[in-house]
Image (cartoon, rainbow, N blue to C red; front, side, top):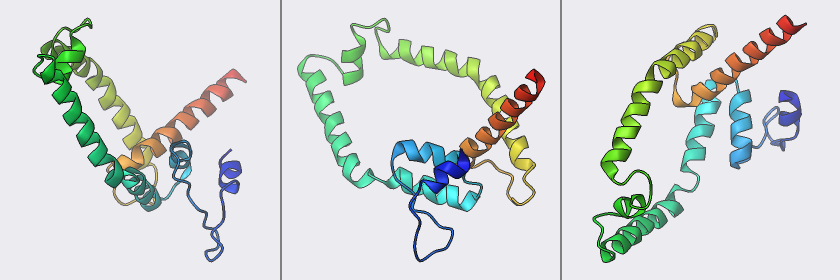
Length: 157
């Protein structure tokens, strides 16, 4: 699959072995799982995150302003209060309590997952910095998942 996906990408004529990286979200996830170079993953992650920031931030700010304006006109203190009213969570405090409870329950599992991904990266002797960066997690999680899948396939045989 890795070679098929990479072979499907357009080559950069002036750079042997290089390919053009598509900026679509679908390609982004696939690429992130395949790129062994930490520096390349970092560059792709940063470019992906900055892709439409300049155009979208003013639109999002305007949307937030209009939503709050609408809520105030209807007698609510905020847009959040307005949309929560007909839902099970009648107020912002209920939502916050719910989120806090979830955070408490999933934190131990998240810590174990981070330890697992750190262990996979630690096996990579070509990397000097063993800290898992934002652009590393998906790659090393995928490496771990592939090993897990290979192990379960061998046990089934």
